[in-house]
Amino acid sequence: MPLEATMMIVDNSEYMRNGDYSPSRFEVQADAVKTIFQTKIDSNPENTVGVMTMANKGPEVLVTHTKDIGHILSALHATAPKLGGSIDIPTAINIAQLALKHRENKNLRQRIIVFVGSPLQDKGADEREMVKLAKRLKKNNVAVDFIAFGDGIEEGTNVLKAFVDNAANSDNSHLVSVPPGPHLLSDVIITSPILSEDRGIPPEAMGDAGASGSGGANYEFGIDPSLDPELAMALRMSMEEEQARQAAEEQARQAEAAADAQPQSKSTVRDQDDEAMLAQAVAMSEGRDVDMGEEEDEDMDEEEAIARAIQMSMKQEEKEQQ
Image (tube, rainbow, N blue to C red; front, top):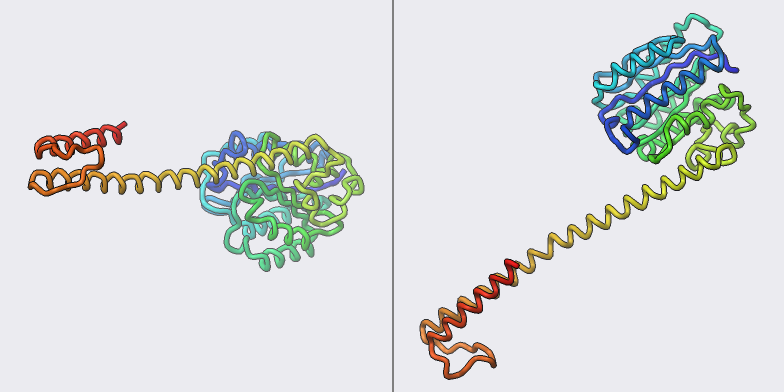
């Protein structure tokens, strides 16, 4: 089992309030952090785990090198009500690397696990800067895993994959993407290449996921279907349902826009009809000849014509109100 010191970087930006991962992005992330911690400690009693944030007022180390789950839970509990701002991945990774450098047991390998559920910002969205950082981490023997979910999937896949490809050394870095769905974030992670060695699964058993620096990114959802076909099927169905939902919402928006435009044209027609009726009434009162249609009696006197015009106008208004 691997002998490692791990620093987990959690996303505590405003995006973590989103409920597309029930009950919220931050809650499923917290559950995944606990799962990773427990798996690392169970894998080897010498392992240590730390946790830090990378948004709000800026990256902040909450716990360094602990074997006590209570410290991790307290840190997550304190972070939950302080969500806000945007993520700063490069700065957070540099701070995490510095924290790992000062680990007590120098025999522990260094690993950073980054949760990304928000759009990449500033240098974090610059592929060139991210690749430069990745190469420096590789030189210092620091493995980096990315767990992309929420906005981190669509907004950051290419940049994060490039980072992992350049940071990987003998397949020690991975990227796993987890779309919304009924599955738990922690369930996907525990069956991914990120924790394969901790669970006693050799890299060759992971197929292509264990043979590439991008790890689980080579699979559709970062999961090898041969290892967990039920989970892979659930992820695929969840993605299809999400796509169908988005398509339905788009159709509803288009229908609503068309409905908003329709009353305006009807209103114009009603205004024109009202003006015509009023013109007929005025003309009758002034004694001018007005064509009232084939049903109009030619011998109708002026008073009856005016009354008829007014009556027609009132009926039209009643129909419109109905």
